[in-house]
Amino acid sequence: MSEDHTRVQEFFGARADAWDEKFPEDGPAFTAAVAECGIGPGERVLDAGCGTGRALTPLREAVGPSGTVLGVDLTERMLAAARRAGRGADGTL
Image 1 (cartoon, helix red, strand yellow):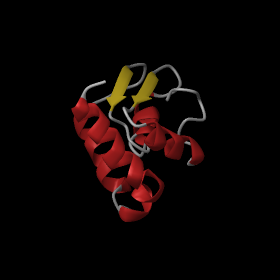
Image 2 (cartoon, helix red, strand yellow; image 1 turned 90 degrees about the vertical axis):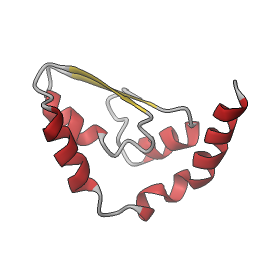
Image 3 (cartoon, one colour; image 1 turned 60 degrees about the horizontal axis):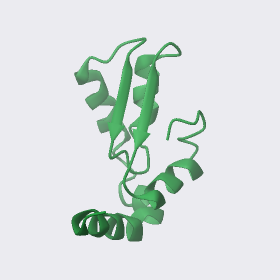
Image 4 (cartoon, one colour; image 1 turned 180 degrees about the vertical axis):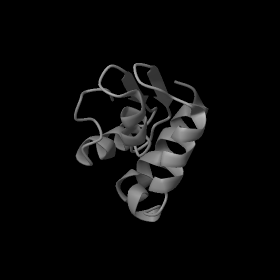
C-alpha cells in the first residue's frame, strides 16, 4: 500500500468512532444529493469511500429491493463504524 493510502487510513481511522457525532445534521444533504443524481429502482450503485455509510440508506431507498448498493472504504475502522450503526446489515460493505 502506498504511503498516501496509509496516511488516509491513519487520518480517518483515528476519527472513525466519533465521525457521525461530528456531522449529526447532514442526513438531509445525503438524501438531496441522491435525489439529484437521479438514481432509480433496480440500479447498481457503488459508494466508493463510503466512510461510516451515511449515504447508504438513501441510496438503498432509491434503488429499492431490485437494486444493489455497495459501500467500500479504504479505512476498516470507518467500515466497522458503519456496521455498528447497522448500515451494513445486508452485507454490502
